[in-house]
Structures are given as C-alpha cells and as structure tokens.
Amino acid sequence: MGPGGVIRVITETEWIQQARSGDHVAFGRLVQAYQTPVYNLTYRMLGNAAEAEEAAQEAFLRAYTHLRSYDPQRPFRSWLMAIASHYCIDQLRRRRLTWLSFEDEIAVPENPVEGGLVQLASDLPNPESVVTQQERAVQIQTLLSTLSPVDRAAVTLLYWYDYSYEEIAETLDLTVSAVKSRLYRARRDLAKLLEEDGENGLQTSD
Image (cartoon, rainbow, N blue to C red):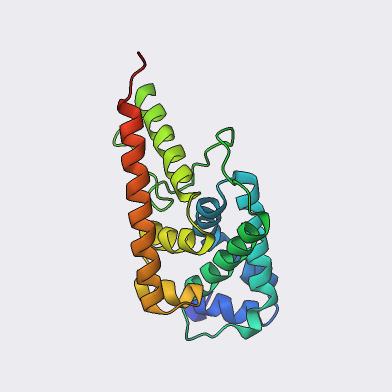
C-alpha cells in the first residue's frame, strides 16, 4: 500500500525486476500469470498431458536460472515461450518416436480459446457436441504429430498464439523467409492429410 493508504498495483516489469534480484515470490507471480499459455504450448508440441506439464515446469526452471540474461527490451512472454519451444523441440528430436497416443487424455486448458480449442456456444453442451469436439482435438493433435519439431512449433505459434512471422522467427531463431517457407510447407502437408482423412471417412465397406 502506497502513501495515504492508496493501493499501488505492481506491474509485470516490477515483478520481473524483483525476480531478477532473487525474489522467489515475484517469480511465482510470473509463473501464475504464464502457466496456462506455456502449458498449452508444450501440450500442442508434445501431445501428452504429463510430458507437457513436465516441459512447462522445466521451461520455468530454465527461465528462472537465466533471468539475469533476460533482455528487458524484449517482451517477457516471447522470451518465455521461446524457452518452452526450444525445450520441446529438443525433446522431440531426442525421442524420434510417435509422440501422440490415442489413449492419452486430451488436456482441456483453463482457457479453451487460448489453447486452440473451439469454445462451446452453450454452457450445457449435449454429449454429441462434446464427443465431436474431443474427436476434432485428437485429429488436430494427430496431424500436428506428422510435422517436424520446428514446423510444429511454427504452426502452433501462428495459429494458437497469433504470432507474426517476425515473432516466430525471433522465437525459433530463424529468418522470416525460413518461417514463411516452413509454414507454407506445413500448411500444404496438413491440407493434404485433411483431404486424405476426408476421403477415408467417406469410404464404406462392401
């Protein structure tokens, strides 16, 4: 509380400054502010709820460890998302396995719109709507799993976080032209897979 009993709102910049000075509580505030978008990103990248949670925790740990190297001129969100993206890319490259299992529980983020899922119009959706939405979420994750780790990150940042080409390039350490090329190829491949899925869905047995 400030002079005269006026409550002063502490800004994100001040939380960052305090965290860089070793204030654990201040960093905890930053974690609370960004835990949902970071988790949503790691889930989209890894396709598994448990692995996504572990990756999000690792991203915050790395962010805290390297806070002194953070450039205040850069948006903290972008810096944090870059750390999470690169960690997931490294994990996927090491694993080199099919990372999505249909048995995995589809994670529903606190903010379905921010997480890239379609928000239901009704507060009381019918069972058919819920099933359709879940099936669509599985389909999206399955399609994303076909992309390379870096392409997957670029698509996620573009469509679920509305990043510009420039922001994606900065986050993934790419040139803008490389980002455009990767997104063009990824969209082409995803469109082809969607078309194939549609054709398979129309096939009937004899």
